[in-house]
Amino acid sequence: MLVEVVVKNFYSFRDETVFSMVASTIPEHPATVSERGDLTLSKVSAIYGANASGKSNLLRAVNVIRAGLFGEKGDWLEEMEPFHLDAQTELQDSCLEMSFLLEGELYRYGFHANKQAVTEEYLYLETTETKQIFHHTDSRSQLAFKDQIQDYPAIQRWFQAMQVILHTQNVERTVSKARLHLEKYKHNLLTLIQVADPSIHDVEMKDSEFYVIKLKKQADGTFEPIRQGFLFQDVESMGTVKLLALAGPIIEALEQGSLLLVDEMDQSFHTLMTRYVLELFRGEFNKKGAQLIFSTHDISNLRSELFRRDQIWFVEKKREGNSELVSLVEYQFDDTERKNTFDFYRNYLNGKYGAVPFVPPADWWVDNGEA
Image 1 (cartoon, rainbow, N blue to C red):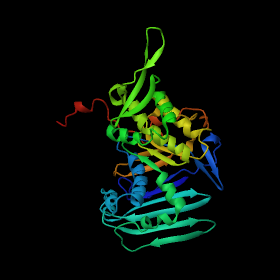
Image 2 (cartoon, rainbow, N blue to C red):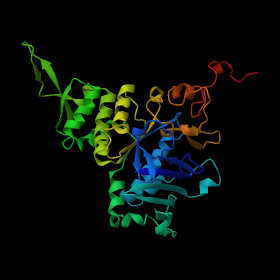
Image 3 (spheres, rainbow, N blue to C red):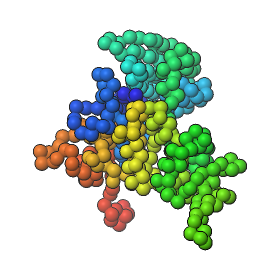
Image 4 (spheres, rainbow, N blue to C red):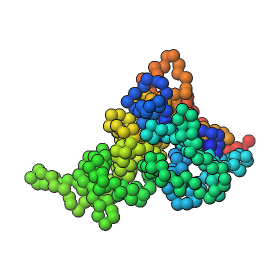
């Protein structure tokens, strides 16, 4: 399971930033965390913030680490963008690090890199004392661990099972991704997309295209499937098409106990559909400790009955252009506020937690700068 991600000088994250799945000692929603030895880890986390605040950059960091290990050699280095709005950081390496728990062992893996080379890479086993597995500081054109990861099968399986979905609005990618899961998870996949459209009877592949099969009421009152079907993208909403894209990764994560990260998961989704996906991960259905991390703008789900305070994160773009990340659990609550029952979103909209757009007065356009 993912323990934490550390990002420094990467896109909008100028300063060292830590995103953690480690649960605090608060008593809220115990079923949404998983006990793993000395660690208690969250099964879900939501990342809120204004447009261009840097939410996607946090997920992109995880994707770059995975791409470095399994992608084309060197191609992923193009993603090593430093923070450009500071003359010092622009010339420095980006730093990415992940800690994860596997088979009762805590590992910490990371590297420093720029667009030309990896300048430092390390893997540590964090037992009662830190044990160095390897640490390279010489300049390289690719990750050394990329060629060694097969010697660490548990780590290899964990990274390979991880899924980072950054562009769910891309329909072509949506269809191609779902195609991989249709045969393996047909029943579960169908059940999930019926949440979006209960009139769907079946889904089939024809000539490399998805077709939805629906029922037609006959004259005698019985129902028969229309076997020729309808092209999925022609008759279904963007939300249903998107759920088709996510259904496979969701099912895989739950069956394997793996990590799933989704950028703007709520886009084109009804609030209750998002909540349904949350329930799959946060409750008793998630027996293997699968984890879901997603960025979102849907404040209707920013509620204490759905999330622990340590499962909600806010990203705010500061005036210098850098992103700052903070967890809701770090905020102090007034004595009059009942921590486990009031609606978080009211305080969020009122600006208590930051991470909201700066909205000028509606009459800003009246002043055109003329004296």
